[in-house]
Amino acid sequence: MSLFQHLSLLAVLVLAAGFLSLTEISLAGARKIKLKLLAEAGDERALKVMALQTQSADFFATSQIGLNAIAILGGILGEGALRPFFMEWLSAVYDGPGAENIAFALSFVFVTTLFILFSDLMPKRLAMIAPERIAVAVIHPVLFIIRICRPLSWALNLVANLLFRLFRIETTREDRITFDEISAVVEAGAQAGVLQKQEQHFIENVFELESRSVTSTMTMRDNVVFFNLNESEEGIRQKIASYPLSKFPVCDGVIDRVIGYVDTRDILVRLLNKQSVFQLNESSIRTVLIIPDSLTLSELLDRFRATKETFAVVINEYALVVGVITLSDIMLTVMGNWGSAIEVNNQILQRNDGSWLVDGSTPVADMKRMLDLGSLPEEENYETAAGFMMYMLRKVPKPTDSVEYAGMRFEVVDVDHYRIDQLLVKRVDAIAP
Image 1: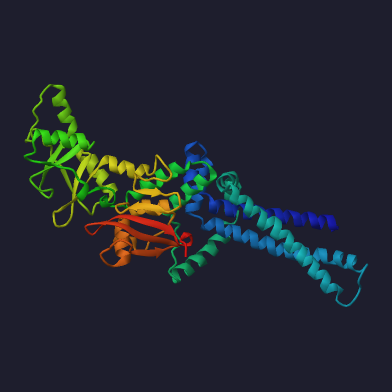
Image 2 (image 1 turned 90 degrees about the vertical axis):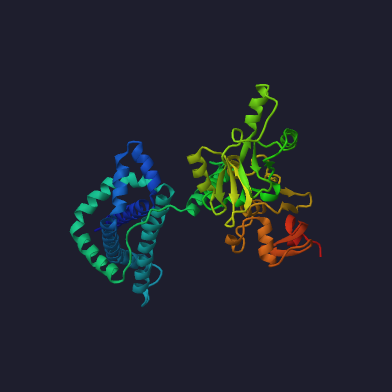
C-alpha cells in the first residue's frame, strides 16, 4: 500500500479509538439529575443512557476491547508501514548503523502522539464539556457495538466479577447526593453568575436547618419578656408598649413555671371591641408548645406544622426554661444577612478598622460565615460565639481573655454575670506589635 493508504487507514483507527474514548467519558460523567430532566422533556435516549449506567459492565468491557484492539493494530500498522518511509527520508541525511533504530523510534513517536492527541486527550476533554448531551447523541451506536461484542464482553465480565467477589469489592454505583455536593454545586452556580450570593446563602441555610439546634436561634432565657399570672392591666400595657413582640409567655411567678402564652392580637381585638379590661385567665391564655433543647430547627418546623403553632418554649433536661423561639426566628436563620453584608441580626458588626464586634449569643454558623472561617475546633461541643470562647479558654471568662485561631484573635470585651456579652475579633496580622 502507498503512504496515503497507510495514513488513511491509520486515521480511521484513530477516529474509531477517539469515538470510544468520547463515549466512555461522556457515559461515565453524565449526571443522573440532568438525564432525568432530558427524559422528562421527552428524550427517550436519556432513559437508555441511565439504563446503561446502571448496568455498565458490558459497555466498559466493549470499550476496552475496542480501544486495546485498535491500539495494538495501530501500533503494528504504524511501525510496519511508516518505518520504511522514515528510513527513506532519513537516508538523505544519515545512513549510519543506527538509522533503522532511529526510524523505528520516529514511527513509534508519530503513531503514539497521533493516538494520544486525537484518540485520548481531545475526545475526553470534549466529553467533559457536555457529557449528557454527547451521551444521548452516541447511545444508539454504542448499544449496537455492545451487541456485536457481547459474547467476548460476557466472558471478560465473568472473570472480572469473580475477581471482584474474591477481593470483596462492591461494584454497584452509588448515586446518593450529599449536602457537601449540593453546596459545591450551589457555590459553582454563584461563581458562574447563575445564582446571586444571597440566593446561595438561602439555599445553604435551608440545609443547615437539619444540623442546627433550636438553642442556636432562640431568644435566650435572660432576654425573654413574660407576663406574671397576676400581672395588672397597666403592667401588660407597659410591656406591650416597651417590647414590640407579638407573643408573651405567661408564668406563675418565675419563668420556669410556664402556663401558656398570650397573643397580642387577642388584646387588640378586645380594644377594637371597646373592651378595655384585659385579664389573664383560661380564656385569654393559649396553650404553649414545650420543646426540648435537643431538637433541630428542621424538627421544630415539623412540630410547628403539625400543631399549627408558631411559638414554643425551650426547656432543658432539668425542665428549666432556656429560651423561647418563633417561626420568625427560623425564617431569619434562613434569610441570614438579608439587609446588609456586614450585619447579621445586629449580632455581628464590622468596625472601620476592619475588626468585628460579635455578640456572645451569635450562632457559630453565622460567625463562621461572616468571618470567612471554614470550621471551628470540635463544633459539636458549643453553638454560640460565647460557647466557642468558653470551650477554647477552658475556664470562666473575664474581660481581656483571648484566644487565637485561624489567623484571628478573639478577645472577650464584656462579661455580664459570667456570661460573655461581646467579643472583639481581629486578624492577627492587623494587630500592631
